Structure formats: structure tokens, C-alpha cells
Length: 150
Image 1 (cartoon, helix red, strand yellow):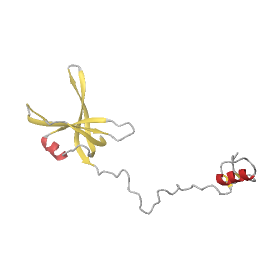
Image 2: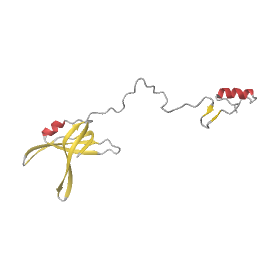
Image 3: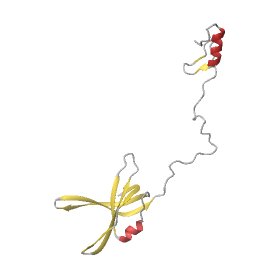
Image 4: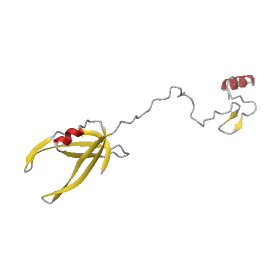
């Protein structure tokens, strides 16, 4: 099985002696980058494998792993054992804007309203009304509106 994510935690190395000899293991946690991120804790056995993975917090990785269950006093415990870790190249989150682009330009497909029409109601300006509010106020004064534009 395989899963991708970012290394978020590296636990201290553990070691011991068994009937087969000395052993070393280390656990690390990755967090997937999905809509609902998942945290997964992996075990790595063997000092040579731990050193070859050389994990660092923040690295994007693809982990190949096996899942197994062990019974202890009637309870079952899962183990997630990583056997291969590939480091992924970081992907640029926000590519830089093209310097020739005008960021203040309207989005494609935008058409500004016509100067002589009322774009909201689909008609032209009613007779006698000016699209410019200053001119409308001046027209009202000329018509004897007492200085009020309405």
C-alpha cells in the first residue's frame, strides 16, 4: 500500500535486545493533504533503513507500507510498517504573476456598460435625465427645483 503526505513528527529512536539480537526502530507521523487530512504513524525497523530514509519534518513523502495485526491478551493491535519512503519534490503553491499581466484589468468576458444606457434595466437613459449626477443636479436647478436634485 502507498500513501502521500508531509512529515509532521519524528519520534525518538528505540532500541532493545531480543532473542534474535539487537534491534532499533523509529516511528514517524505524516499528515495527508486532502479535504479531510489524516494523520498516520509508521514504524521503521532496522538502523540501516532508518538512516537511509533520513526523514525531516516538513518533507513531502510517498510511503510504501504493510499493515499487520498482533494479538496480546485477547486484544488486537495494528502495526503500520514502512518499508520504502520516497521524497517528493515540492510543488509551487502560487506561481508568480506574469509581469506583463495587468492585475487591475477586468476578468475575461467582462463588458462595461454603454455610456448612454442603463445596463441594469436594459434601456437607455430616460429623456431629460443625464447619466452624470452632477449634470442632473444642475438640470434640476435650472428647472426650478430649489437646488435639490429630486
